[in-house]
Image (cartoon, rainbow, N blue to C red; front, side, top):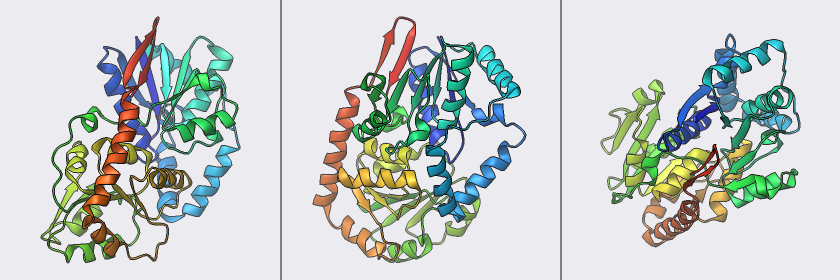
Length: 353
């Protein structure tokens, strides 16, 4: 069985979900390949496309949100002979029986290819946010894997029958699902600042660091500027660059301060670590933030002028409140674990993780 997972590096969430799926499938002795779809269809301008995306997200969120809403109401995906040949070559060389998409553009192109060239090809899509607008909907999709019941309802409202939708959460690496370690008192993990998505981070950290009982681990990722800015700045702060062991830091923390990304949200759920969301301003992250509030698994700051430092300190001094959030996370986790299996239908494999 050969599975081809198509994704894109718009941020790292879609790619991270793909790697998690690959990990799950390989445990079942399935041959899996993860491909950045933009390497295939737009190889010469891929770098430019990603640079423009990063700029819009970090500097021009209103413009980004406009295009996000526009894409929800558009099925436009330029499909010509060259692109068809590139897709055909990719599928042939991978010898894929099944294609899994974790990014809507990939889904649209493969759906078009399948409709016109290969009806027998199986196409599954994993939606990597709670909110699922129409950009995720395409013809020829055999199954939708979604994050929550709210997502399922949104998909059904767009005409997709419930039989083609499975509520499975968002894929996370197996390490997040393993036994939880003991939480360190007053340990905070700060992550998601790589594109400048946490506003007033310097001010927030400065106030927090004045409290000697608090220790902060700042996950800077590949942002060397951020790493250099905070390394050795505070005695009670540890700055970590890019790491494959995010799960170790998240599991030990009492609280995660971050943006409302879908992958981070479900990593936090599996780590049973309450999540403190800085003001969300990207459309899809607003949906994730509302999910956090509804399920009482964290705190969302909607007003940028709010004094978040004092709020965070008070939350750390409220163990009962944090414990209630962890209990709610456990309930969500338990629901997901009921479907944490691999189902085999003849020669087809569907991963629910």
